[in-house]
View (cartoon, rainbow, N blue to C red):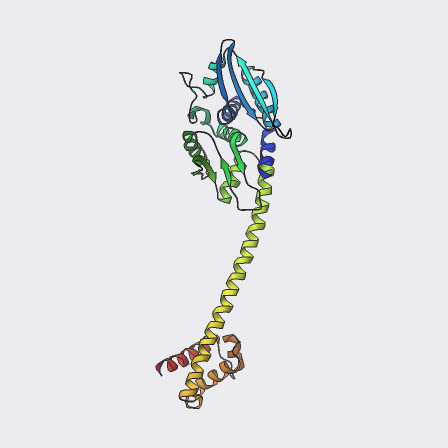
Length: 306
Ligand SMILES: [Zn+2]
């Protein structure tokens, strides 16, 4: 799946700056399934992910930023095929650390929305969004129409994310599905920009390739539709002209018409499927397409008067 390819690609990227590491860690914990527990032996933070690469990234960030070592367990579902990794951190200073990350507020409650200082810099915005995609992002396969989604738990976070995206030139919108709000990016250009921002360059190349192929197909289809339209419009017009010329023939006789009109009327009856330019070429001297059209219009007017 394309979602998985994007995740695999960005989970292996390590941000070199501390500011970006904090932004990334914060988004992974806040938007993932992070649960904070306060206990006697210290406080704990639990989070889970179904991707081994993301689990490794969280472990590395926890170590590097707060010298935390997690307890990792793999949870299997009853089929035994799908598993999730559960990471549990214990720390005496956990509350401080989580405040530092903007995950808890001063009162120790879980924060909603994104703390502005975490995403102040451009480099941090990019790292933060990478975490968001790893934690709650998805993108449909390249075959159908494009659709990228981010599904954080709180509506406040969605509004904040829309603003962060906007600052980077990506238009995101929110919508509701089965009572749950989510953020989506629909336009091809915006999705491409998003993939570029989070650094998923390989996925971006694949996306652009499929976009180009699709656009070419659409362009060909559009031209075919246009041609088909022209052909049927021509056939309709020819049918109408012939009906009216026949009426003239019955009521007044083609011989009574001025010679130039008579010639054109005669040709139209003999060659009902020919285009106007082709009829013009049969005359001597040849006549332009607009000349023929003009004469056919006059014939139609005459018939209408009858
Ligand atoms: Zn940064």
